[in-house]
Length: 321
Picture 1 (cartoon, rainbow, N blue to C red):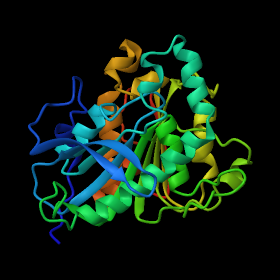
Picture 2 (cartoon, rainbow, N blue to C red):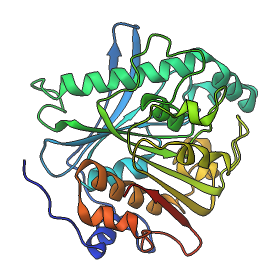
Picture 3 (cartoon, rainbow, N blue to C red):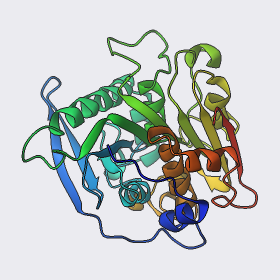
């Protein structure tokens, strides 16, 4: 398979729009919306697919929105991934998506009820496993948008808030009381991106993360307080500090709130503020290039602190790069 030459810092920053301003708008080869049906659960999962200009097979990243979000969320990250020659697959999780709050008398109460429903958490994990299986199946299905477009040995997952929780558990974080018949970790996922990571509940951190062996990028902010679960900015760093079985990176963006990473325009201004989108996307792409493609320039960028991508008061810590 043809390997891309490692980009220099200048090329990385120019390609990702990490210099002051917004992410550049490039035309994608294709954006496709549809419904994937999981017959084993009789469950319809809305998806949004972004294909890069470069023909496949390319690495693919599954994106999982936060509580009350949609497949349209994390749009800045999906676009940046496609512009960087990754396939981006946005999932929408019924039961913990925007339908929860749209017609509710109390938005906060409706979101809290959805978050506390264990069935929604389990459904998200099953959505993720199903999505991996569907990607592998559709990559070889004539006529499907993914046919011939995916390198199925280079799959990753990214998520915000409840989506980060989903990715953490797909990659091996233990569930209190057992895995409920799920086959975890999902070994076909080779990297994870956690936007507003979730601290473990019901288990000590060292036990909760003991079986995690997948590299992950953790991104949070100095004002990243949880609106439902009550997590503090310090709590968001717990997964990074507890995981010892694989390379990890932690970016803490100065002034970023919990909503800063969501990009959910329908939820209101605080959930769609673009201030931190370019930095988050740039770090995500460099991390994926380091992990999925073994790019030495990207690994060196992480190891050196990635100062050209971060603000003067942002912080980056790495282990294993």
